[in-house]
Image (tube, rainbow, N blue to C red; front, top):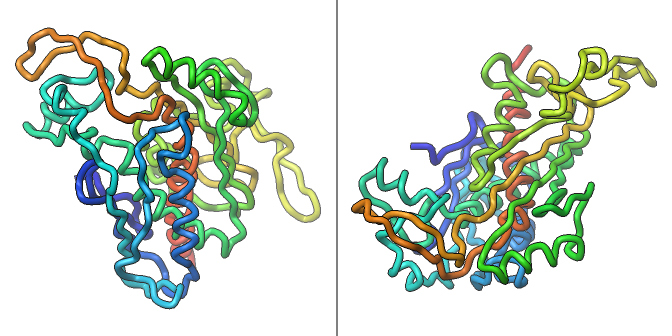
Length: 338
């Protein structure tokens, strides 16, 4: 349960962090969509670990294999299966803590729910699962390009460092300082969607905003979501927060964009502006207090290779999840009226 996302454009991800590999099956993609293996690989390379000391040092090539659904760089209309083999999984560092519950991680709740878990890197709770989402997102992006819809994610905060768009030199010291102390740091990723037509979103429970929220909060370590002015709306009067309408060159637009491009759960043609907050990585070297499977109080220090700031490599993951929602709603919108 819970491994499938979407209604028409549907994905099912599979695989564990330290298993044989991770992959995705995409169903509902229209036939004839142009997509190359190289385009999928470009997206996977953006989230790939081991590229610097600011991210996980796990050395994975993340080379994608297309098992079905694409022929001569076109989708066939049948299920698309993509697979990436794990090449640098090393479970030795987890042997010492396999019976200890990492604070902030899914260890305890998975054991409580299933009565058994894959302790190697967190299994399905590991952020490695997100490579399957990114691979599927590459297909969704190809569909969005036909509408000239653009999705772009970017870092806006790492720890206490804030900027409209962060560059590596802005947050490098913040991450290195946390890492040198055996700790981790959180962050915020912003997303903007441009050129989305008016009318995407299905009342009442399948609002575009609701599906975007679910998609983005499903990313590991996401603890906050907001659209437009978000929580700042609580401080405003209606007269300040409402976006007045006007007609420009024959098209209706809003003078401002406090709503963030979605009203009543339906896109209004303006830029959609989103933000998601990531908690600090739970697997840290710094010693913490916890309990083992028997409830005994113990100390834990997590070794191995982990991102000191999850938000850094989450940028392409956020783009992928947004693209998947938009592709799904694009297809749903085609059956909204005759």
